[in-house]
Length: 529
Image 1 (tube, rainbow, N blue to C red):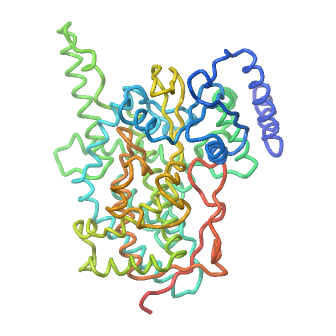
Image 2 (tube, rainbow, N blue to C red; image 1 turned 180 degrees about the horizontal axis):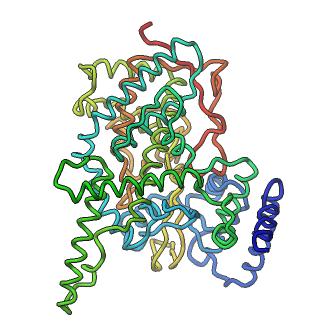
Image 3 (cartoon, one colour; image 1 turned 90 degrees about the vertical axis):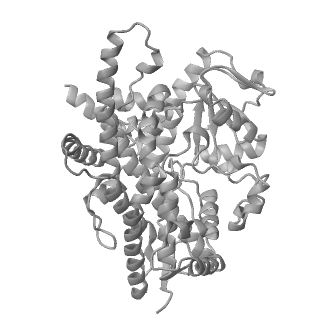
């Protein structure tokens, strides 16, 4: 009987009825909640309260801030402050960070990726951040730069071969293979060799880790993101995996692969022989060292009544947490950098003058076949191009922070439990800091122009203590790829590309990351036929 009931519910919430059912339930519960909730609203906290419909959140944010100013309040089962005011954000993200450590939880999944650093709160976030940070230090990046360089050479050779076929190239397919190979080899010691061919298992499951949804299911998820309790009920109580953010097959493959690999790595750690030097081994080493430290501390604590409570916070992670970090690193290391590289090549194709100026800088600065780390640091215009790409297409367009206690900044009060929504994409397109914000102009990031701007105006990787740990790795992968690729090929738009010459990329609504509605396809030509 239970199986029949589950099937019936699943059938009801499938096909064309999904959106209607969710919308109806959500509106009904919202009406009930509105009647039973308190009269608390943003007006009494010095903020204009506005209404936000069940539309795409990014579109709604942009429209409301355009209409009502840089800081507005909405009430959607909780008090939410949406602001691109840098003075407010500076307090929330930096000065008063300890009151705003946690993020709003909108991510619903049964996957262990929910234990990844990005989603953790409080002491768990501090503990895991402390364990992970050494793995992204400059010395580690220098060590893996050779692997990145070798993979970038392969990418350039593949694109040069594509140029000879006179066919348009689906850019994200190749940039995804590029970043997948790098993360597989440098983080987990896996030898993947798919660049330019068919995706191997690892790359295929990486690309499918977060579900790609139909337009109807996208609308349904927009409703669920507004009503997290409903999302949790459907996924965790009713067991409807169609509402899981993570693809079940990808999660199963990556989790089982990591379980097997971790068992091997723990044996390496116990042995006296030579150990792998990748990210996973450093996490295993940190975990096992932390386990040993915890055992010692437990013995010490048993013999002492004067132990500082802060010293009892574990300096390690559980097996599930380690797998969660690994899956998150796989996704972040693959998806965000591949997408940024795709957008960058599109912008260069759209602006051939910038592309040639960048090529000339590369030819002037890079003396050998492969760029040195010192030469990469001297490629100022290259970094300007990357930064302007990130400004127009930030990897994570929206972030959030939750107030542990009530705080007042000027005439605005943020009450305890309220969530501050940080629309990164609107900060990066604020005309007060970036005139003519839709224009692609790498010269915005010359040293002279940066000096005239508040540093917080540019935060594509976040800001403050929760700044993205992988930022420097992403820059390294982007720079090395662009050096090798642009020395061999050029990119163009024409009447057969996507978008066409004179057109623009259309961004999919409802997706958590900036994703084109249609995959970008560019014309690739040999620079030296």
